[in-house]
Image (cartoon, helix red, strand yellow):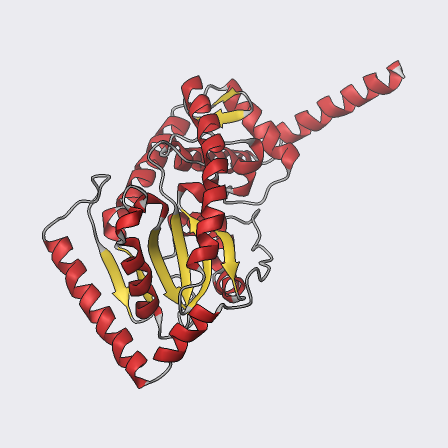
Length: 329
């Protein structure tokens, strides 16, 4: 038994030595990929587990090689490990923050599940998913529940208007953060226009909650995201609520005609004009962020120039800093 252990130790040492002698360029690229992944989530002050680093790495890798790379980076002082979580910062408070956020997210997801079942009953809604920080299993004291909504073809603006009119109901005062329906697409245009690390991350973390099959088609239409995260996979989405209730059927019956065509176009133009005024006035939301909406017949989504683009610039700056650090060491 002792001989076997000693032999295994020698084999492991030889294996590690072989790994360290592999092409230095590949090893350097792997280190950079790991740092790039940690830098992305560091902007959100969110340390990662071994598995999460692998999931969001921009290259294929096995667990053993990733473990070896993480250990090398840790020994070199590039990253720190606290309580099973890796970070670019030697700050245990980030770990505590994440643990608390994960616990709160579990509670908020239970609420989101109930609300999703209700929202799915609105006319022309075909699928709903959870996006934002909650889809990454994190929620702080100011957390919202962000919904990604897929609607029937050419009825997005009727569905969106009805859902947002409901949100303005007086009895929802103080609870509107649980009804952030901020991203809509319809069945005509399921493919996401913006293709970058931010939208790819949001796509692969999107949590399907309810639908008739449209969410599965949405993922199939956006497999480009896997080019950013080759260790991820498109989920096998199950149809969760295939049967529509009478209220949904009645609402759709009323507008499945030329009146519905006119109304959907009118609501799109009206909403676009109102949001253009908000953008021109540089209005801020409750979080102090610029308000903006990007619209078309087949989508309604936050204007990317007010967060999405600035975030990408911030991430690019982080990567330049990492490149400089790698060159000097």
